[in-house]
Image 1 (cartoon, helix red, strand yellow):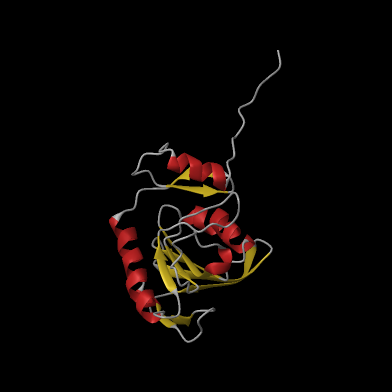
Image 2 (spheres, rainbow, N blue to C red):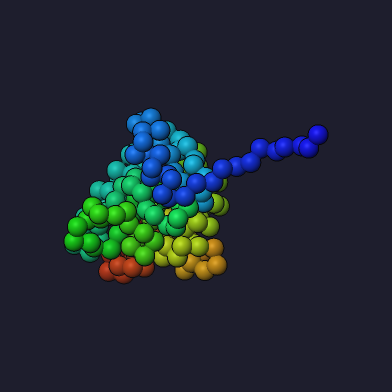
Length: 186
C-alpha cells in the first residue's frame, strides 16, 4: 500500500475573491490570504482596537492631503497574498481605491498592531512586506509597549530596524515632513 500524505491546498487571489463572493465564509469571519494560505485572524481585543483608533486619529491628521488612511482593509501584494493590515497610509488616489484594492506600490506606510500575533508579524509578515518592497513597516508592540520601525526593504528583509519608546519621535520615510510623537500612538 502506498502511503498518502495530506497536501496543503494553496489558493490565489482570483479563487479567494470568488469564495468571498459566493458567501463561503461567514460574514463575521476575519481571514487573510498570505502566500496562498487562508489564515484565520485572531479576534480584535479592546486594547488592539484602541491602538488602531490612535493610529487613525494621529496619522490621519498629520498626513491630511498627502496620503489616504486605510484601516483594516486589504492590500493586494501578489496573486497569492492579500493581507489586511491594521493601518495603511496610501498614495493619494482620486477615486480613493473604489475600483481596486491598493497594491504594494501604493503603500507609503504599513502598520500592524501586535499582541497575540507578535511573533508572526515579526517573521512571516515582515518577510512578506519586505519582499514586496513596502518602504516602511511598523509594529505597534503592545507586549513590550514600544514601536518597532522597519525600513529599507531588501531581499525579503529590512536593512534598518529601530525600536522606539513613548519619549521618542520619528519622521515618515515617504513623507519626511510628517513627524510623529510615539506617545500619541502608544
